[in-house]
Image (cartoon, rainbow, N blue to C red; front, side, top):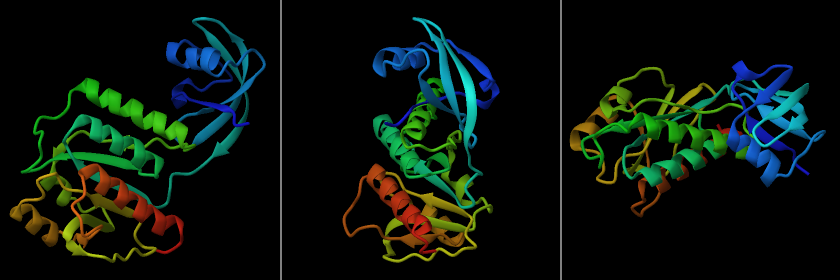
Length: 241
């Protein structure tokens, strides 16, 4: 049987922890039906996971005691960044959840000429998106939580020079891609529902992006994003690079 798993930031990890988060307590007490003496895992989102034991659990309070460090995993040597356009919020949430499960390291939402939404989401939406990412991290047994940048213009992302490999999903691309062992920082870009403008295509080409054709069919933004992340993750994890 798999142990229950919860997230607490590293600043809260101590030998003994008093948890007051009602959602965590409800899940531990009423959903998982754990009780005094039971064990659970706590990950800090920064590479560490600990084994804890429940000391006491009440309606509004949970006390746990650290037993040992179970896992300490360094930040992945190959980092994958996903840039996606602002569009329907429920579809963005799908991207955040599934791309996290597939091992993305950072999300880069952007506004472009043909994005449906041009106004950056409110703080509350970012908070909701952050919670979705954390839950997907917990569910997928990851120990590093992907980061989420504030919304920027596509041009700003294109002009950044910190990536070893830059790939954009495009019907104008080819059905092959080459990833080498030197590619430690990989940027993936999916365009908006209306596609990229001619000027944006020009900027992508000038910035030496590789154009990858995922299908002969027109894919939804979220389909293209998940397909692209999964494909690149397969090459990396499968030792094809």
